[in-house]
Every structure is written in structure tokens, then in C-alpha cells.
Image 1: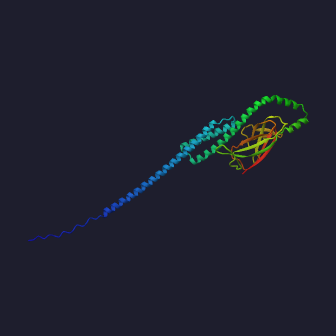
Image 2: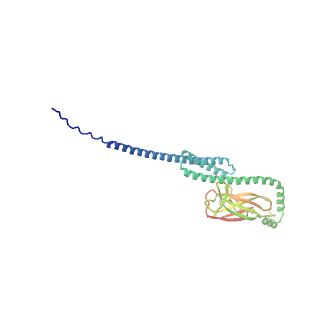
Image 3: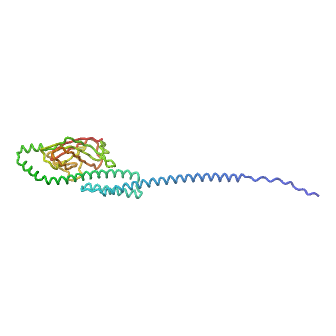
Length: 304
């Protein structure tokens, strides 16, 4: 008897759908990971660049402040008020330097303040240089004055014997006068150069240059020239020294600055400087020069 066998059905092929889905997911995952990695690298490069920039700016500001402190240590003056002002500036620089080093201060703001402090320092440098030059001239003049003392005393004795009318004529004839005078505001550049300006915000000094004319009547020798700078509100701009009062035109008043000029009865050129301690106002300024109680000359200038 023949045994019957059931027909065998062909095997269905395995589905690749799950495998394909897994491959696609892996590709997508790799693309996302690559994108995130590139973004992270760009962010890291940007951050490193900012760190380098901030570090460089901090080093520049720190170096500028340290250089100013070193330069202040080289400045020497016998003017007490200037010494006090410079000590205050040094303390301000030291305080700013400490804040910059600690990282607790805006570098942009520190840079701006450091530039302002450096301009102030350059003003002190110019002022002290002017004072030192004046002191050198005074030293030379005093040596000459000793040799001329006998002649001056003889002239004084002769004048005391003249009549009151002659004394009056001589006094009037001995008043000095200028043949030229200019006055204006000056701005100090970072390189120390003086530049004329008519802008109140830029003005840091008042400069007056003049020529004392020939006068054969007045006595030769050192002449103390007083300069009064009168602001637009009618006030005399204060001198750097505490004792700044003198006699002129029969009254007592204040002067802004004074200097000695060696006068030998022939034309001589000279300049005088007044340094501002703050912002100057806009308007018209009057500059007056006095010698021996009499006005020598005056000039005017305007600041916008």
C-alpha cells in the first residue's frame, strides 16, 4: 500500500524591513552626532578666541597702568600742590590696576579711564618741564643779580635824591609794555605735543606768549610777570600755589601764574602757561599781564 506524502510548501524569504530600518536609524544618528560635534567645535573655537582677545586687552591695560606708575616715580617737583595732585593720581591708577588684575572691572571702561589718566599725566609732565626750565633761568639770573647788586643800589640812591616830579616821570616811563601778545587754549597730545584749540572740552592749558618791548628807562634785571586768566563768568582762574595774591593798580588781587623774566632793556620773548585742573567753560577769556603793579598788556580768546 503506497503511503501518501503531504506536499511541502516553499519557504518564504526573510523580511529585511527591520534590518533596513535599523540601518537608517544608525545613519541618522551618526549624522546628528556629527553635526553636534561640529557645532561644539565651532563653539569651542569661538570661546577660545574670545578668551585670547580678553587676555590681550587685559595685558595691554595692565601694561599701560604700570608704565604710568613708573613714569610718575620719575617726576620730581618742589611744588607741594602738584605733588599732592600727582599722589592722588597714582592712588587712582593703583586702584584701577588692582581691579583690572582681579578681573572685577569692565576692560572697556578701564581702557577709557586709563587713557584719561595718561592725558592728565602728560599735562603734569609738561607743567613740571616748564617749571624746571623756569628754575634753571632763575638760578642763572640770581648769579647775575649778585654782580649787579652794587649798580642797582647806586641807581636806587640816585633816584631817592630826585624830585617828586622826576620820580613820577621815571615811574611812568619805566612801565613795561608788549609789542606783541597772543593767548589761547592748548591741548596736549599723547606724544606730549602742544596743539592750539578753540574747543572747551579739549582745552587743558592756557598759553600766553608775548614780547616785552625796548625800555631804556626801567631798570634791567629780573622782572616778575603776573598773568591773570579771567574766565567767562568773571572769576580769576586759580594758581597752583596757595599764596597767589599780589598788588596791582592800587588794589590786591589774585593771579593765575607768575614767572621771572630777565630783562635787559631790549625786546625779549617769553611764554607763560596755566594748567587746568578740570573742564574749561565755553565763552570769552581775558588774559592780563602785570609787572611792578602795572598792567603790561592783555589779550582775549574764545572757547566753543
